[in-house]
Amino acid sequence: MARLSLNQATIKRATVAEAVDGCARHGVESIGLWREPVADHGLERTAKIVRDAGLRVSSLCRGGFLTAVDNRSALDDNRRAIDEAAALRTGTLVMVVGGVAGDKDLVGARQRVADAIAELSVYAAQAGVVLALEPMHPVFCADRGVLSTLSQALDIAERHESVGVVVDALHVWWDPAVDEQIARAGRLIASYQVCDWLTPVPADVLLGRGYPGDGDIDLGRLTRQVAATGYSGDVEVEIFNAAIWAADFDEVIEEVTRRYHDVVEPAL
Image (cartoon, rainbow, N blue to C red; front, side, top):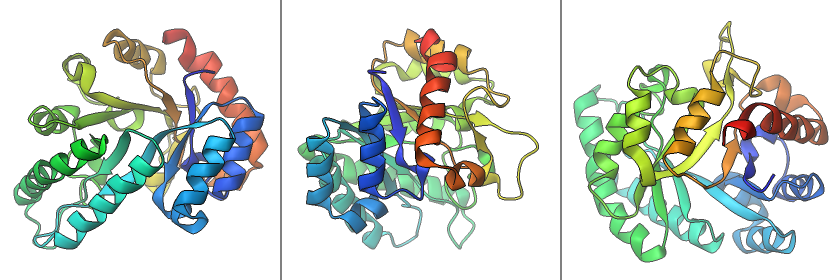
């Protein structure tokens, strides 16, 4: 249980207080937080409640959305996100970089991401925060993430101090080059997130995540690849699923811990 983290999105309808309390009661030592519920609860109050519960924050989600032609407001918001991560005492800010802008210029959008990360990395380094670029499955390229492969994310991360990558099982498992790119990532892996890919895919593909072991991803193999790099950080279970969101929080956390023990932990 020492490395298990519950990403707050898995129990999306829980408040910060409910999520922290649930983790503490079930022996989960780490939590991945999201900016919106943290803002609702209050940044300082959130930092205190996590600290008082004896938990740590594995990551803060999310920065990013840097693909607009004029992204000055996004840059300002990302600086605020870096400050929030530092206040929560997490060294990892997950970056969902954004989809194709209105001009449909995919090449230009990716370049704008690279330019923005170059600028933000200096601020992040000063704050002691790593910008963790999250490559996303190509189905999300239009609206959420123009970085579709771990290779694309690493091409940016390798250039800058205080920039790393997220290995999210849902987003990378399909990639024919995933073995090579996980090995390449090495120390740049800032976060490892697990869930499973469910078929048939729901109408809202964003909600097609399941508990580890319920879908098509060989999580044992993927976890062994990540472990072989020397990654020793937290393993976040992050699930977007309407039925799981509607379930009792305690039942979900119990199932998350069971699946972590059965499916993920043996490969670490």
